[in-house]
Length: 292
Image (cartoon, rainbow, N blue to C red):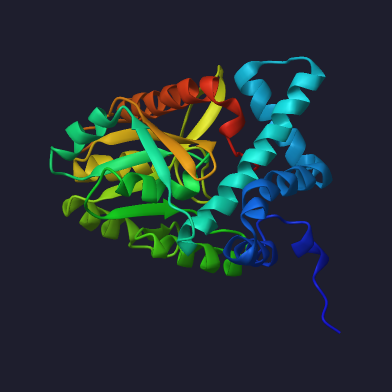
């Protein structure tokens, strides 16, 4: 008799749920595609108390302690937003609905791209980070490379990567290739945009400790070192979901590093990144999906 492993049922990032979501977005009626993901997000939030507490702690980091009902409403909003974003990332790969995107601070990008050294995009796990590559392709005619940490479930990762490739975005997973940094430098030399996440530090990766809302926070050195080696500017870009298949990318002022930055210069650049992230989170606290 066919059995579904219980752990897969309780993990929203498992291949089982990813395949079910893909089938739903490919063949489900429009009302189901549009309106069911937030319900699934709430369901997962209800059965995952540890994740709920992590989300509550993140919101308190940004907004401080508030009335329990206000906190509960925002915790629920995080899970709803996360489920919608994950579903729409799969939906984008099917070609069933077009992506509507807009940008703020796009002049910062154009100035960086005009330097001809490529652009290192420093982003985070916010609303739309799964569709950040296609959003960037809307303003960048060249190659877009998205660097990500490997997912826990290799089957889910393979499925998601296939959908990303259909949108014309190349995905590189941290840790897959010991010479991966050299490959990224080659992409930048050709004028590519290389997007890297800065709100989580993968195992074995060096980090700089800075301040996020007055508390210590670790930022991976990877985006900063790649930028220093290549001469490319670092551009903080954070995305948010506005509505069904509609996203906005917000670009802050670029950060530049010398070829051989000192520890203090790396610390200063890392703090600039986090300060830009703070500004985004103050305006959009329920669009941060930091579940670890």
